[in-house]
Structure formats: C-alpha cells, structure tokens
Length: 310
Ligand SMILES: NCc1[nH]cc(CCC(=O)O)c1CC(=O)O
Image (cartoon, rainbow, N blue to C red; front, side, top):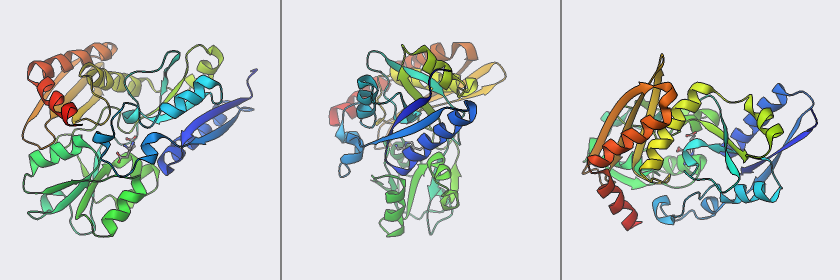
C-alpha cells in the first residue's frame, strides 16, 4: 500500500467528531500502517444558530466547506450523517461508502413525561425538523410544537432549563454521544417516519482516486447502502433538501426492500403517505417510483408552499 495517510474533513460538533473518530478507528483497524487524521472545520450551518433551519436556506448548509477542502486537496474524505448530505454533489465528488446503520428512530426526551401519549394538552415540544414537527402536530394537534436549534448538547440543555416539556431528537445521535439514558421513549416509524438516511454515516470523497476508494470501500455496508439509496432517491425526486417535511424510511426483508414515504404540511394539517415493496437491487428505482406516487397525491403543492415560505 503506497498511501500512508487519509485526512478527514469534519465539522467540530461532538456528533460530527464522534463520526469522524469512528471512521478513523475503523480505517486504521482495517489497514495497519495507515494513519488517519482529522481536519476540523466550521460550516455555515454551525455558525447560524438563531434562525430556524428551514429558513436559513441553501442546500448543504453543513457540508459545503468540507467539500471545498476535498477539492482543494486539503482533505481526502468527509464523513457525514447521511440525512444532512445534500442530494447533489459538486463535480468530481461523490458518496463512496455508507456504513452500517445505527438506530434510525426518533427519540422522545423529557424529564417529566413518559412518552408522547403522556403529554398533557398544551405541552411545549421542541424539534428542529419540519418532518418531526408536522408528524407531531398531525398526531397531537393540542400540543404547542416549537422550533429547537443547536447541536444535541444545546438542545438537551434547553430542555433541562425548562424551555420545553419534551424534545424530539434522533436516537442515533444520543446513542453515539453516550446519552442513551436520556432517551425517555423511542418513537416507532409508524408514529414518526424517520428522515432519509437517518442513523447512517456516509463517506464522501473525490471519485477519481481509485486507491482511496479501495481503502475506504471496506467500510461499506451493502444492505444499509441499498436502503439509503432508495430513501435518498425518493427525497431527490421530490427535490427535497434536508430541511423539509419529508420522511423516507426503508427496511430489507429477504430480497425485498420495503420503502415508506411521507410529505406533510409543517402545520400538520395535511400528510400524504404511501409505501411500496420491490427488489433490493432496484433501490433507486423504487425511491423514484414512490416519489412519483406522492407527487400524484399532491406532495408537490405542499412542498411548493414550504419552499415559498422559506
Ligand atoms: N440534523 C442534525 C443531525 N444530523 C444527524 C443527527 C443524528 C444522527 C443521524 O441521524 O445519523 C442529528 C441530530 C438530530 O437530528 O437529532
């Protein structure tokens, strides 16, 4: 092996650092003699903290600076939470690897109440995503659902300070940060359909570097790869970025991929959902087909309203 070093461009949030350290450890374990280093960077999404994500706008809020570093040759790979990765990549870059998935569910966190059903009328619930907000409002129109920004630690502090009765976060982030004991209840996909790619970590790199692709390829997890491809294809076909009220979640049953999709009005007044099953090998096609079905049921009008507001 000629290459002795791989440089990872990463955000500095605790979750991003955990993910980069995870990939570093896995790569060094797989390739003795290889050194993996971290280039810690700040992105626009990290700097703008006072505005709801849906209104900050621009795709790839959390990844652009990392991509520039790879194109400049300052870094070799970037490690991402798949749900934050924009649908399109700059020329020359692409998604090379999707690692095995952590828990894809949303988690309910409260210091007072056991679960969603336990919340009293008018309880204040915080969430940073339109997807969670719309499903929550549809399920419990009596709740006071409010925006919640910041990294995982910041969100928990706001809950602990009493600003919210409960908050909803991704279970994967809490587990990775060893905060699993903060999870009061898991919310099943039937109640809150996860975001495309939630819980999965992916690696982006230059696609012209065959040696690099071979080295990182050992971390690819084929079933997770197929699931995330299907979910992302649905999202892409709906022209959804990452800050949209879209849920996309799939599981594999034998050779069959079961994909569920949802588009909702953030105020919870309307939710369109559908699902389909097909061969795992057709993951991409299934995602597009489900998106077509959602569009045929009016998803486009909802999304147009959301983008118009943003
Ligand atoms: N948008 C922030 C973000 N990006 C990825 C995760 C969690 C981990 C994952 O989904 O892989 C989180 C935190 C959250 O949504 O609570």
